[in-house]
Length: 363
Image (cartoon, rainbow, N blue to C red; front, side, top):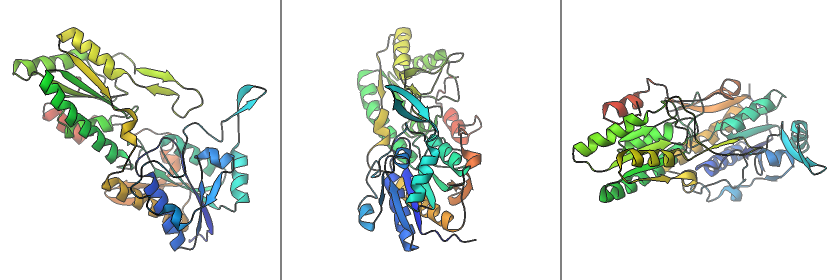
């Protein structure tokens, strides 16, 4: 059954990510080719609540394919179902979801393309339960959304991290140091695993496998005994020791990501230096991974997702997410995806490849 939508909305939620603009561009161009107007919603769900919207024209998306960030702006703080406002000098949380729906109705927006990660998709699913037609596009550098083989932005993040690892190798070798690269990924180790293998790391520590520091130190000492006086480690920000917990940088209220991870790389560097006497340094790559120009792969994938999202709406789908499976774009239920993790399974072939090529996984 075909849907005769005349006007749809598009928003970007959560953290910024390489390829967001490529999706927006594809959504606008595909909709216009089908005589459907697109309303851009500023600053994620905040713009939905506060009625900050603009009609998108072809010139809005001209020249943005290779541009990082999002021309619509984004936020990872505002949930319309738990929206922070100030009353009598106090911050309180209220349900603004119906106000958001009224704003869409006033603008005659009949359906929504939501581009975001797990938090954004979970909110999209909540709107679906209120009757709103939504198709989600999976966005995150962490690659931690289930039922899709790849989220756009991940390839760019891995490319940046791999280049950083290549650069750290020359310093490590010149100074006979242990160099540690701490990468993003939250509670999933996809970035660490991929860039660690690509960059020839001697050790890769990921959240899915709690590490034993003795195993890491043993790897370093064995390298020294073979005349290799430096070591290169990749540590995911969510890595934790056996019997221990993640390293928390700070707690931030009113955020999709209340617990901000960070600091595990520096912690391990101190421990290694104390135990081995080898100078150990940590580089935290941080937000460098999520900014700047997307790779060609991410531009293509983001474009495919944007086209597929509009086509899904026009084909009568709603409460769906577009996904990549076996290099084909398919749709799957948002309800099946929302709030679910996508971690590396212990039988993952890439994990096995790392182990078989001598990479220490902290075990």
